[in-house]
Length: 181
Ligand SMILES: [Zn+2]
Figure 1: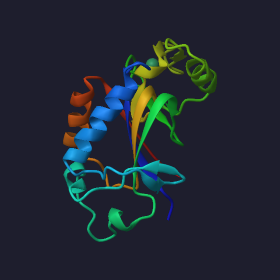
Figure 2: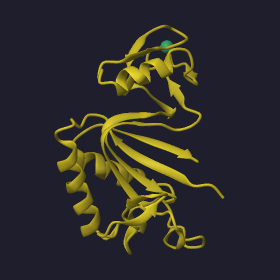
Figure 3: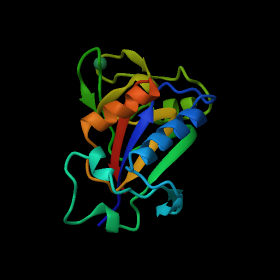
């Protein structure tokens, strides 16, 4: 079985604010026992925080049978710094015309543009041609662009309430990036 991830990406955190926000959310998750405080090797070669005894409070349905606790890769990996949070098989929805599509022509150029420092990098809807900043695009399987992401490895689906709580704590808009390796 492959590994899956869910990443809560902060769309708006600046590079300066990201380290402080990362620490605030981490401390809050530790205090609620959703994650363990220690960093261990539990994020596929990177260090992360293993789920704590209270992790069920973050997910829709606790997975008692297979048990995320027993997995080797089950950590929360906190990523700070300019990052393209990608997934395979992206699907976006145009806010102007409603078209749903898998981005192709021009997408990787726009992603490179953003990664190289242009916060205003744009991508045009292939249906109606309306340009939208890369960070504004949403859809069924969006990518995330930002300076801060919380990547949960192999956790059951995070609950909408939990994601909302994290967003409120950050005080920013977030996007959830999901995928399988
Ligand atoms: Zn459109």
